[in-house]
Length: 327
Image 1 (cartoon, rainbow, N blue to C red):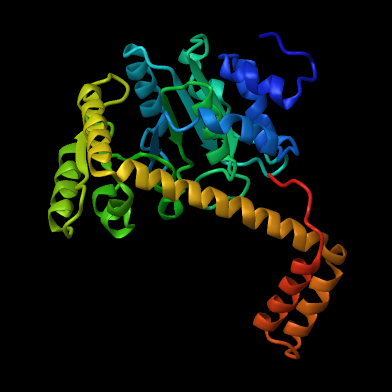
Image 2: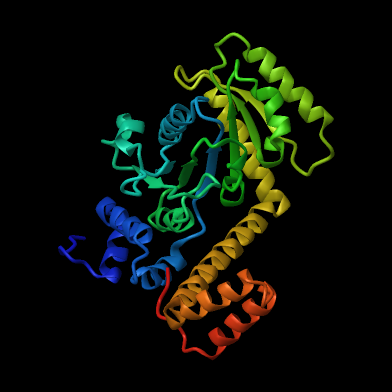
């Protein structure tokens, strides 16, 4: 389907569903820009979502997340599956855009029509994900990508929200960085479905592997006990075993009903975030913010408590006319 220069949301959505990569890119741009058309787009995409496998990759800087992501793209393409990648990058302090481009990360895949790579800026989100990630994921899902890989910013302990977004979460660690012990301290065990010791050809890899296996033995009972895998993403050594572990986790999710439960939690969180964004927009529009400023001044000088101030503001919201579309 050929799009006009200024395609409307319905035309863009139809083109994306038909496999047009430019339409997919433009829809994700609508998401990032909080376009007023996003409500219509979301409604059009909804019946076509819920089929893609979502795999999250997280870990500290320097563990090889981008190289591992690229290796997984190759592996899934070898299976004949279409692959989407959302690479979450730090935001530029000047433009708000992603500092690292998708061509730099995934140059070997740029000529493959069945691979789509997009960098999203965190824009200050400390959880390691862009606020737009769930909706961008929805676009790729509806566009027919079988697997979507979400690679997050390496920001350490704050990088845990990928676990709520992905069906399977891979936590990457590397030898010589003290990650075996730090993983237990940082609560990484709680978010990992699979622990991956990358750069497994380096000295200390076996030690890191044993640390992780030992830490898991000390952990309490769990419905799914994370597997520990070795990987050299550059050479591909250990990649077939990692794919098999991901498949085992997917089978477990389906057999235990955990896949459905996780996606329900994801949808609930997405709804909550959209509702909160709408509420903040209405708060900002209310009296041009004057009423909020007045209440804030009273709380600051001690003449009013913050709960009463919030009740006052919410009562005004209930009586105000509904706001326009929000992303």
